[in-house]
Image (cartoon, rainbow, N blue to C red; front, side, top):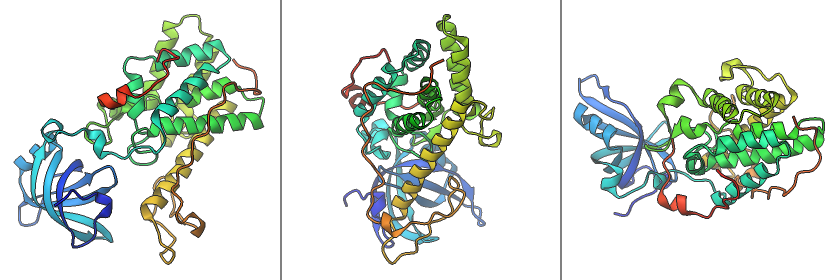
Length: 363
């Protein structure tokens, strides 16, 4: 039986193959026997699965070796496919001869091209202090390789390989348009905030066993991590304008907008306000299209999706979206940006490391 992709499962199907266990928990049934509800993942989808009559030893083995070869059948639970696992064999990535990235969704944009656009935009920063601050942080050991693979989130938006780069470069385009409309904004400060606001997600998130949080991510989070990185970069470059450092730090610290959303400070500068709103816009509109893609409603299907935590409502999918992929080509970043106001743990594969890169900047 050939390996089935998880997005192709239907009730009544038999399934056999190797999948990644994204999360699992050990529970006890009323009869005293153990069972394991889990989420299986491949590059196409995630699917809930159930292993009945399990054991503590089997659960510990799955935690140690999260790739599992399964035999099972597909049932339906609460309107969605659910795999009932009849047999399983836990494997390490090495035993399976696989890379975690083979099981994870990936941006439809070209990652080397996104990298080139990033470098060009950094090089175009006119304020020497802003540019040096950004370059110093992007030059942190190993950050570039992690940036190539990092998602922008675990599940809410841009939750796929390369999602962080895609999100950042989308915000660069939005920031430039906002600065064209409000030319009194400090374009370089805003662009620096865009480039750095989520950069510490490269340490907050890992792809070792699917998208999950590192210990640093759980205990500190990407906002605190990045503010620390900015402080370290300023100490390394003692001649940087303290006002520039403070302004960029504030954009990072306040970009979630509200204290209850994880920001230690609310936006207090016009650039910080712009940063928050364009970040929120890109996250929610991209998240909306991801929900539409997963729902894939037909012409006669209900147009309301399930309640979304990201959108804080049930999305309504207009008929004009039918057949839309949700992916637009990334615009080429301009070689020189005119106008504007005054300037003040993912694990990469070898193939990913060896893809073309320009090397124009030291990060």
